[in-house]
Amino acid sequence: MSDPDIGLRLEAETSGGFGLFPDKQKPGDQIVEYRGAKVLLIEDSLAEALTDAKIDCKTTGKGPRLVIGKAEDHDPDQAG
View 1: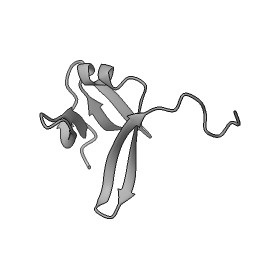
View 2: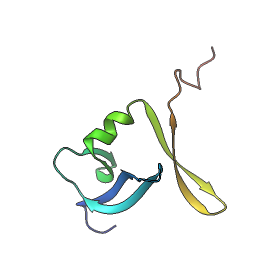
View 3: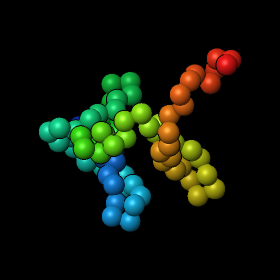
């Protein structure tokens, strides 16, 4: 995206899933930045529901997919 004010908005869908679409930051949004660029915009109420969740991107046969799951309770690089 060439506009630095545009990021991908994560939004809950009525079907129970999540959707992503380009949008500008709104008051109350939680912002995920990567190297100074706005990458993910999340409405505050949804961000609260996703507290302690792990958000990742996985490559599948159908292309990249957003994956939201439980964050690990421990660092997987540490034994234990």
